[in-house]
Amino acid sequence: MRVPFEQVVALEQVHGANIIRITEHDAGKGARSDADAVRGSDAALTNAPESVLAIRTADCAPLFFLDPRHRAIGMAHVGWRGASERLASKMVQAFRHQFLSKPSDLIVGFGPMIRSCCYQVGKEFKSVFGSFVTKRADHFYFDLAGWITEELRSEGIDLKQIHDCGFCTSCSNDEFPSYRKEGASARHMWSVLTFEKARKSKHASK
Image (cartoon, rainbow, N blue to C red):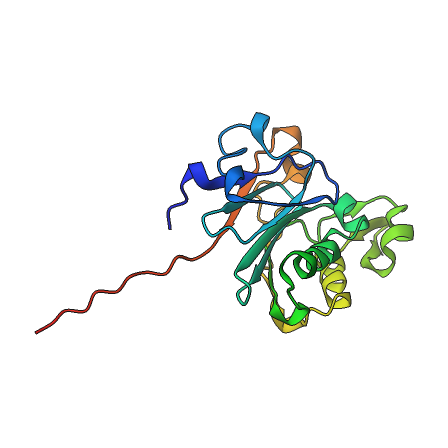
């Protein structure tokens, strides 16, 4: 499927928990330059049928939200700061407020992110994320995907509504960018989400 750049909407991504609702008037923002990206936000949702939401990541979690019942979509960029501010939970609440979505209406997808096998953090993370930080060989590791899953479950999202690709950006650095693995030279991966347009079918007559 081709994604027209003039419809892409990208966010500034400031490692926070601000969510913005996108309208058709935002089309093209941040698509070709960070200079005109939607400012001050790490998450967006919309029911504008032509919108294409975009997130850039290189270890953080790209989250995809779909409410097929109310024809609404959303994306969130979640690193440890966004996780500590419960951005995934706030997205579910935002869908409820903006589109009257029930938790049972939502489907959530996890894109490639750094996983607990590789996400080494400081001891101080334990006081914030509790059991989602484990110690191995004198180092601490954070389970970002597990934390996000628990956030979603606390909002009423059933596990069967969550679809996780399972890829670790650090383990699979030959396929995905990883800031932890590559440092400042790491590029970013784009994740995009849009509405599937109905295709017209042609029926041949005899």
